Image 1 (tube, rainbow, N blue to C red):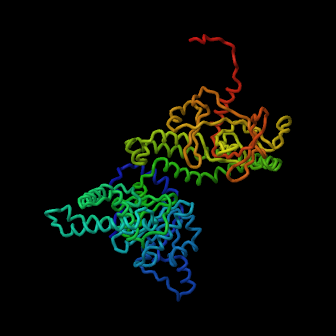
Image 2: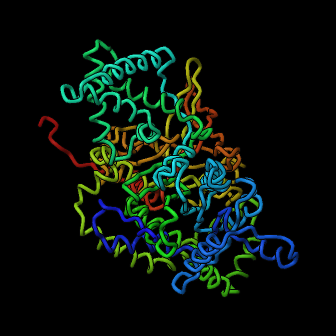
Image 3: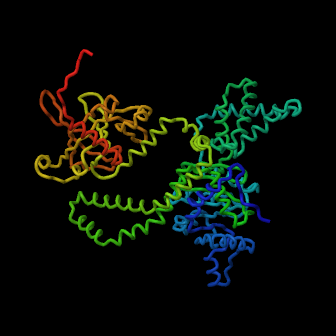
Length: 615
């Protein structure tokens, strides 16, 4: 008798969301790798044909399950390419023999006990850890008979979760850990001897402490985001803290939480990995469970579930993980890029005249300009590719809009982003950051580059200031000499920059539509600036003529170069050297807006009207 596929009880029916998830994660599946030590492999069968004395050592019941899995993958709707590996030799064997397959497999169906039913699952966890390290996004179904306790897939889920997690520092200290353990042991003994009818709270303390010592409790506190368990554990902590306070303890609830984590790491050390996989989150709701990282999504499903129902189980797990709308859109974009890239490239390659012209320009250009020509071709191709996949993405986005119309807006925002949803200034500052800036590109100074200029002083620390380059792009090509002043400067590239004045995120958001502010990520931190010293858009920006050494070419991977500034020292005009580093870049249209504002300032006309100064 086969079990029904796991279906979440708490996720409300949203057929549109099911379709969105299927389109983003399941439809892109092209290949499947099944890893199970009890399954037959092509290698084994070929070997048996060539040498009839050899044996496949596969039980009929396991061969039948393998057949049903293969049929599930190859049915008419899916037609997935499928391969089977027996996992013998541990994770290193699997990865060495099938490294290319693992990297290229969109879905891995992985048996938990690759070393037999009595194995500890470490080989499977090793495979998962390696999958989490590669850049290809992998969906994994851990298809299992149950954990060492034979408690079913739930037991294996927590073992997998702990195997992907590593110990964390609690800063509790050995003495404090032992003191809390002693106090908990004392109230546990008192609870054990209490009359459950006369004092049920005291009698339940021993069970509470035992509950907090389980692997599940440790993992709940280790990650702190399993929403379904909060109420249950909150009550346990409330009872324990009341009992400790009554006994004269000075420990606070946070100390007990740290003790649970430290005790869990000591008690369940054999289950823990050496280090944690980055960005891991998890959730469990009855039979539905999931673990996800940046490049891995795992769900554990019992082998009692028929293979034909695995896709529904996977979608239920994905749905339970509640991918945010933006996450779904990005996932679908990856699909469209992969599907539409070859077609878009072939259309471009059909234009032989364009290719001949591009290659001629490339050959005839100066060495410094060749990189810019290639970069321009990449920009155009990305634009063409975007245009190609846009109609399909627009249809997907329309479905997102339709699904969003069925939910409570504030409830959804609170679910996905919690306290972040209340930080309105930071929300809009980050949104504007994405809108107006991008990663630094290019090997030389360009329009919209944000410069951190370090200016030496005769004594004390150097002065740090931030500027935005606002010279036209055509004037910033290294090696380009048009005669006259520029040619006489040699390899010193003249450019205009505007001084940026720091401001708070809240003020920047309030005045964002005045178009004089910029939002940047500098050294991983949000930084907001205004081009006007008094933060008023009507005030003229402070600009200066700089001269970049070596034609503005960067000297290192950190995008640094030296520049010269003109100033007056002792009544004489002198040039001083300063170190500049490009720490950000505005999107071109935002740089053009600031160029326009600067141009208006530099071309203003002073008129001789009079006013009554006594007013």
